[in-house]
Length: 319
Image 1 (cartoon, rainbow, N blue to C red):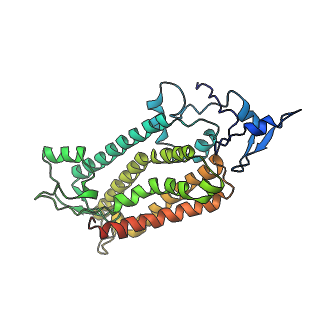
Image 2 (image 1 turned 45 degrees about the vertical axis):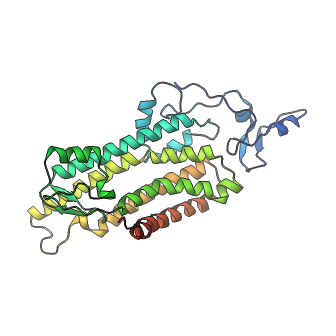
Image 3 (image 1 turned 135 degrees about the horizontal axis):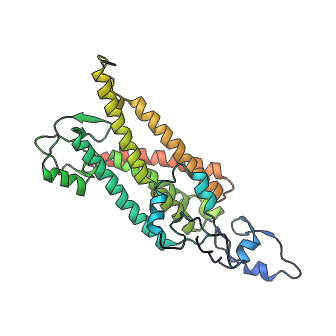
């Protein structure tokens, strides 16, 4: 069971504005509810003045205890539970930057493992990944030398960076577009919340809460990588099955190369992703114009992905 967290005395949970002056003005009675004059957040005075507040959920890496490494793994499976996640995490809970830093570092390691596993599976299955197009695979004979497996294990990013592992047996096509586009979904929303007047000027959400939301979102990356890897494999095997049975023959249709398949999968991902951020701006941050903020975040994220992946990267000669 997590220990109770000590509340910051007489500070607004959202913007950290000092409320002690208002408390000092009380004479005969203490009101039950209050509104922050700085950011407009409605709160219960009991949450501010009590020495203890409701503890963080046991699954949170910020909760006290020695099971932080187990909780870090749990964070990577919260993508489909946004309501439960952001109902349990409250503004009154102190933000542990140290624990968030640990979660961020472990997420980077998990992403590396996921991408390395994907590269090894692709090499083992003789399907050479061609970056730059969604679910685009070229078929050929993979390099099975030990150094090739080691290269995939230690550096699975070559398909998104450069062609240092080009061999005579396999011809790769490299492109930064997929990596930049994927990264934008985990970086741009947090930057947007930092810059939006609704959060920084009007609502005055403290930067620690935005960092918490950003790190919790980034922790979802390993699960998403694994999901798309599994989908890639399923689509390839589906194409192989259809080819064996003589289905869809002659028209050149392949599920893993179909734009329709890519759009459907992206649509499902984006819908769940938007719901995740909706719960952040409504249930957690309690913003007054939450839908406007959400719409702004989603539009900027999509446009940012297009600008970075389609415009800037080719201009730099990296794509």
